[in-house]
Length: 113
Length: 110
Image (cartoon, rainbow over all chains, first blue to last red; front, side):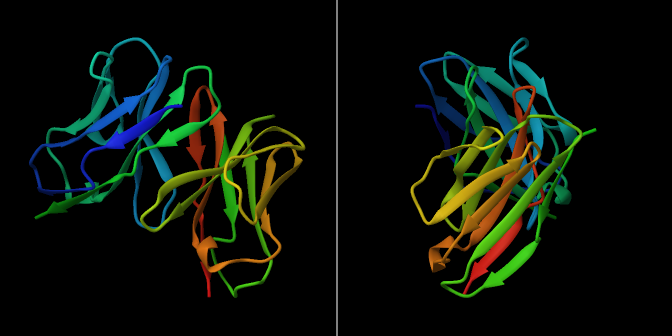
Protein backbone atom coordinates (compact mmCIF):
# COMPACT_ATOMS: atom_id res chain seq x y z
CA UNK A 1 0.00 0.00 0.00
CA UNK A 2 1.14 3.55 -0.63
CA UNK A 3 1.55 6.22 2.02
CA UNK A 4 2.35 9.92 2.09
CA UNK A 5 4.15 11.94 4.75
CA UNK A 6 4.07 15.70 4.93
CA UNK A 7 6.86 16.55 7.26
CA UNK A 8 5.59 19.93 8.41
CA UNK A 9 2.12 20.40 9.87
CA UNK A 10 2.42 24.18 9.93
CA UNK A 11 4.68 26.60 8.07
CA UNK A 12 4.65 30.30 8.97
CA UNK A 13 6.25 32.51 6.32
CA UNK A 14 6.52 36.22 5.64
CA UNK A 15 4.96 37.76 2.58
CA UNK A 16 7.27 37.78 -0.46
CA UNK A 17 9.54 35.15 1.12
CA UNK A 18 10.02 31.73 -0.50
CA UNK A 19 8.32 28.64 0.84
CA UNK A 20 8.96 24.90 0.50
CA UNK A 21 6.51 22.24 1.62
CA UNK A 22 7.96 18.80 1.97
CA UNK A 23 6.30 15.58 0.87
CA UNK A 24 7.66 12.04 0.90
CA UNK A 25 5.85 8.96 -0.29
CA UNK A 26 6.29 5.22 -0.21
CA UNK A 27 5.14 2.83 -2.88
CA UNK A 28 6.47 -0.30 -4.47
CA UNK A 29 5.08 0.60 -7.90
CA UNK A 30 4.99 3.60 -10.22
CA UNK A 31 2.91 6.46 -8.89
CA UNK A 32 1.21 9.67 -9.85
CA UNK A 33 1.77 12.59 -7.49
CA UNK A 34 -0.38 15.62 -6.74
CA UNK A 35 -0.54 18.77 -4.70
CA UNK A 36 -3.89 20.26 -3.74
CA UNK A 37 -4.74 23.49 -1.93
CA UNK A 38 -7.70 24.01 0.37
CA UNK A 39 -8.91 27.44 1.39
CA UNK A 40 -11.12 27.65 4.51
CA UNK A 41 -14.47 25.88 4.11
CA UNK A 42 -13.83 25.06 0.49
CA UNK A 43 -13.10 21.92 -1.48
CA UNK A 44 -9.68 20.89 -2.71
CA UNK A 45 -8.25 22.61 -5.76
CA UNK A 46 -5.58 20.94 -7.86
CA UNK A 47 -2.31 22.91 -7.83
CA UNK A 48 -0.20 20.61 -9.98
CA UNK A 49 0.41 16.98 -10.81
CA UNK A 50 3.13 14.64 -11.96
CA UNK A 51 2.00 11.77 -14.18
CA UNK A 52 5.11 11.27 -16.32
CA UNK A 53 7.75 13.19 -18.25
CA UNK A 54 9.69 16.14 -16.88
CA UNK A 55 10.32 15.85 -13.16
CA UNK A 56 9.87 19.60 -12.65
CA UNK A 57 6.19 20.39 -12.71
CA UNK A 58 4.75 23.89 -12.82
CA UNK A 59 1.27 24.57 -11.50
CA UNK A 60 -1.11 27.39 -10.88
CA UNK A 61 -0.48 30.47 -8.74
CA UNK A 62 3.31 30.32 -9.29
CA UNK A 63 3.83 26.98 -7.53
CA UNK A 64 6.14 24.25 -8.77
CA UNK A 65 7.22 20.82 -7.55
CA UNK A 66 9.99 18.42 -8.34
CA UNK A 67 9.61 14.67 -8.46
CA UNK A 68 12.67 12.89 -7.09
CA UNK A 69 12.31 9.17 -7.55
CA UNK A 70 15.50 8.20 -5.70
CA UNK A 71 14.44 10.18 -2.63
CA UNK A 72 10.74 9.37 -3.10
CA UNK A 73 9.91 13.03 -2.65
CA UNK A 74 7.66 15.59 -4.30
CA UNK A 75 8.38 18.91 -2.58
CA UNK A 76 6.32 21.99 -3.41
CA UNK A 77 7.92 25.43 -3.77
CA UNK A 78 7.00 29.00 -4.43
CA UNK A 79 9.69 31.69 -4.74
CA UNK A 80 7.58 34.53 -3.32
CA UNK A 81 4.35 34.03 -1.39
CA UNK A 82 1.35 36.32 -1.07
CA UNK A 83 -1.10 36.75 1.76
CA UNK A 84 -3.63 34.95 -0.41
CA UNK A 85 -1.48 31.78 -0.31
CA UNK A 86 -2.58 31.24 3.29
CA UNK A 87 -4.28 27.85 3.10
CA UNK A 88 -3.78 24.16 3.76
CA UNK A 89 -1.80 22.16 1.25
CA UNK A 90 -2.13 18.44 0.68
CA UNK A 91 0.25 16.09 -1.07
CA UNK A 92 -1.30 12.94 -2.54
CA UNK A 93 -0.20 9.77 -4.31
CA UNK A 94 -2.00 7.36 -6.60
CA UNK A 95 -0.67 4.12 -8.02
CA UNK A 96 -0.27 4.65 -11.75
CA UNK A 97 -2.72 1.81 -12.43
CA UNK A 98 -4.83 2.38 -9.37
CA UNK A 99 -8.15 3.93 -8.49
CA UNK A 100 -7.48 5.44 -5.10
CA UNK A 101 -5.75 8.63 -4.00
CA UNK A 102 -3.93 8.62 -0.65
CA UNK A 103 -3.35 11.94 1.06
CA UNK A 104 -0.76 13.24 3.44
CA UNK A 105 -1.81 14.91 6.66
CA UNK A 106 -1.64 18.41 5.20
CA UNK A 107 0.52 21.48 5.82
CA UNK A 108 -1.02 24.74 6.98
CA UNK A 109 0.72 27.75 5.49
CA UNK A 110 0.27 31.07 7.25
CA UNK A 111 1.61 34.03 5.32
CA UNK A 112 2.37 37.00 7.55
CA UNK A 113 2.59 40.60 6.35
CA UNK B 1 -16.35 21.38 -19.24
CA UNK B 2 -16.94 19.19 -16.25
CA UNK B 3 -18.47 20.44 -13.02
CA UNK B 4 -19.26 18.72 -9.76
CA UNK B 5 -21.99 19.74 -7.36
CA UNK B 6 -22.64 18.83 -3.75
CA UNK B 7 -25.56 19.63 -1.52
CA UNK B 8 -26.36 20.72 0.97
CA UNK B 9 -23.38 22.99 1.66
CA UNK B 10 -23.89 22.81 5.43
CA UNK B 11 -25.99 20.58 7.62
CA UNK B 12 -26.63 20.33 11.34
CA UNK B 13 -28.24 17.10 12.44
CA UNK B 14 -28.98 15.51 15.84
CA UNK B 15 -27.44 12.22 16.89
CA UNK B 16 -29.53 9.30 15.69
CA UNK B 17 -31.06 11.12 12.73
CA UNK B 18 -30.69 9.93 9.13
CA UNK B 19 -28.37 11.49 6.56
CA UNK B 20 -28.38 11.92 2.81
CA UNK B 21 -25.69 13.85 0.97
CA UNK B 22 -25.81 14.14 -2.77
CA UNK B 23 -23.14 14.62 -5.40
CA UNK B 24 -23.65 15.05 -9.13
CA UNK B 25 -21.20 15.47 -11.96
CA UNK B 26 -21.86 17.19 -15.28
CA UNK B 27 -19.96 17.07 -18.54
CA UNK B 28 -18.62 13.52 -18.35
CA UNK B 29 -19.97 10.01 -18.52
CA UNK B 30 -19.25 6.92 -16.42
CA UNK B 31 -16.74 8.65 -14.15
CA UNK B 32 -15.16 7.02 -11.13
CA UNK B 33 -16.70 8.76 -8.11
CA UNK B 34 -15.39 9.11 -4.57
CA UNK B 35 -16.51 10.16 -1.10
CA UNK B 36 -13.85 11.50 1.27
CA UNK B 37 -14.26 12.77 4.81
CA UNK B 38 -12.12 15.39 6.44
CA UNK B 39 -12.45 15.30 10.23
CA UNK B 40 -10.58 17.52 12.65
CA UNK B 41 -7.08 16.21 13.19
CA UNK B 42 -7.58 13.19 10.92
CA UNK B 43 -6.75 14.41 7.44
CA UNK B 44 -8.59 13.17 4.37
CA UNK B 45 -10.05 9.69 4.61
CA UNK B 46 -11.43 7.78 1.63
CA UNK B 47 -14.85 6.40 2.53
CA UNK B 48 -16.27 4.94 -0.70
CA UNK B 49 -15.58 4.84 -4.39
CA UNK B 50 -17.58 3.70 -7.37
CA UNK B 51 -16.53 2.67 -10.85
CA UNK B 52 -20.07 2.44 -12.22
CA UNK B 53 -23.80 2.36 -11.50
CA UNK B 54 -24.54 0.12 -8.53
CA UNK B 55 -20.84 -0.62 -7.93
CA UNK B 56 -19.63 0.58 -4.53
CA UNK B 57 -16.38 -0.17 -2.74
CA UNK B 58 -16.19 0.60 0.96
CA UNK B 59 -12.87 1.57 2.44
CA UNK B 60 -13.75 2.08 6.09
CA UNK B 61 -16.29 0.04 8.09
CA UNK B 62 -18.75 2.41 9.74
CA UNK B 63 -22.40 3.37 9.89
CA UNK B 64 -22.28 5.15 6.53
CA UNK B 65 -23.28 3.75 3.17
CA UNK B 66 -23.09 4.93 -0.42
CA UNK B 67 -25.16 4.38 -3.51
CA UNK B 68 -24.90 5.23 -7.17
CA UNK B 69 -28.38 5.12 -8.66
CA UNK B 70 -27.42 6.96 -11.84
CA UNK B 71 -24.23 7.33 -13.86
CA UNK B 72 -23.39 10.79 -12.56
CA UNK B 73 -25.01 10.69 -9.13
CA UNK B 74 -23.37 9.52 -5.93
CA UNK B 75 -25.17 9.53 -2.58
CA UNK B 76 -23.80 9.16 0.93
CA UNK B 77 -26.25 7.99 3.57
CA UNK B 78 -26.65 6.97 7.16
CA UNK B 79 -29.61 5.55 9.04
CA UNK B 80 -28.46 6.90 12.41
CA UNK B 81 -25.77 9.54 12.77
CA UNK B 82 -23.10 9.44 15.45
CA UNK B 83 -21.21 12.38 16.90
CA UNK B 84 -18.09 11.02 15.24
CA UNK B 85 -19.71 11.47 11.82
CA UNK B 86 -19.16 15.22 12.04
CA UNK B 87 -16.78 16.51 9.42
CA UNK B 88 -16.35 17.95 5.97
CA UNK B 89 -17.51 15.54 3.26
CA UNK B 90 -15.98 15.84 -0.17
CA UNK B 91 -17.10 14.20 -3.37
CA UNK B 92 -14.70 13.79 -6.26
CA UNK B 93 -14.65 12.44 -9.79
CA UNK B 94 -11.67 11.00 -11.63
CA UNK B 95 -10.56 12.29 -14.99
CA UNK B 96 -7.29 11.56 -16.85
CA UNK B 97 -5.60 10.15 -13.75
CA UNK B 98 -6.61 13.10 -11.59
CA UNK B 99 -9.27 13.60 -8.92
CA UNK B 100 -11.37 16.76 -9.07
CA UNK B 101 -13.24 17.71 -5.94
CA UNK B 102 -16.58 19.29 -5.27
CA UNK B 103 -17.16 22.19 -2.87
CA UNK B 104 -17.92 19.91 0.09
CA UNK B 105 -20.63 19.56 2.74
CA UNK B 106 -19.96 20.61 6.31
CA UNK B 107 -21.84 18.20 8.61
CA UNK B 108 -22.19 18.91 12.31
CA UNK B 109 -23.81 16.22 14.44
CA UNK B 110 -25.14 17.58 17.74
